[in-house]
Length: 181
Image (cartoon, rainbow, N blue to C red):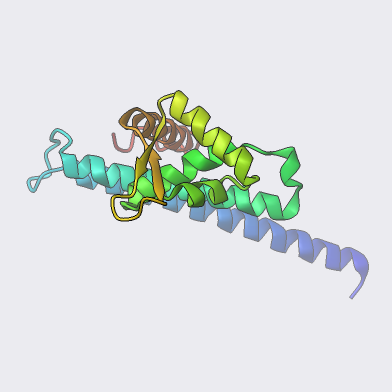
């Protein structure tokens, strides 16, 4: 085959891939929105106040979104120098939020690993986040050598608010903002 024809075929394949990716993203967003709407409806289909289970389901969805953001940061680091984008505090907050949404505990050492920074730097950031009232350290009652770190209620609320706002921005972008509350 000649070069211009190969180039056109490659462009067509690329356009098909990006179109498919766009359609899949739209479908995923629609599914998340519908899941939220269904969780807010009672058996009769009438709108009701959010119950604690609904808030847990919303947090679980936001946790999935946060996990994807964290994975994107790791993907980016495979292609571009981590020195360009170093944000240990954000990586720690993302990891703690995802863990909280999954009901998991995070040791201080694992939080430091999530920061993708030297341990001394990560520990300093844990201390800064603690001073900001976003995280708290807890001693392991079974092992005095181990400590856990978790988001405070304020930290959890702020991370949830951030990801809820991001989700709403995506829905607006895809024209789904009025589909469900």
